[in-house]
Length: 106
Image 1 (cartoon, rainbow, N blue to C red):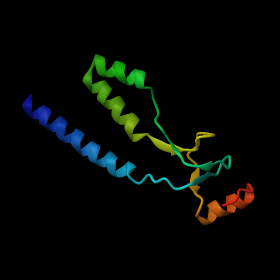
Image 2 (cartoon, rainbow, N blue to C red):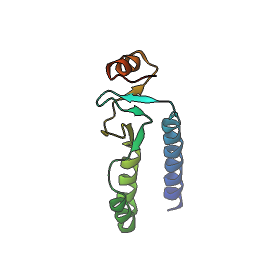
Image 3 (cartoon, rainbow, N blue to C red):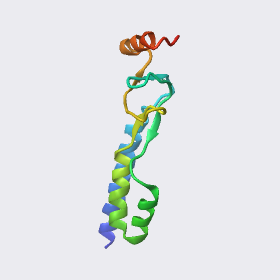
Image 4 (cartoon, helix red, strand yellow):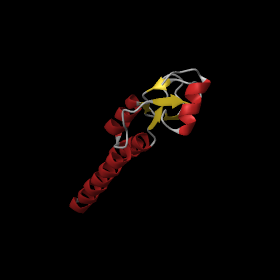
């Protein structure tokens, strides 16, 4: 039983380190949406439900863990206006083209 807990803690630590490295690339630069032309910062969207996650953790540890891992790994940055993951930096060539297309001043 102790070896199981040690492995469980090691997997959790590896997962935390992995997720930190994935999400640390978020910066406060400005973005523009390819879909609707919104200009501003992206927002982070988490799939699933916090309530379902809590219920699964209360019932059993394994389903709660699996659901939590799924929610963490499916997070994405999206446009705050239309919720699509189609935002690009405004200083990229396509971003500058969209600024002109939508008549937005830099």
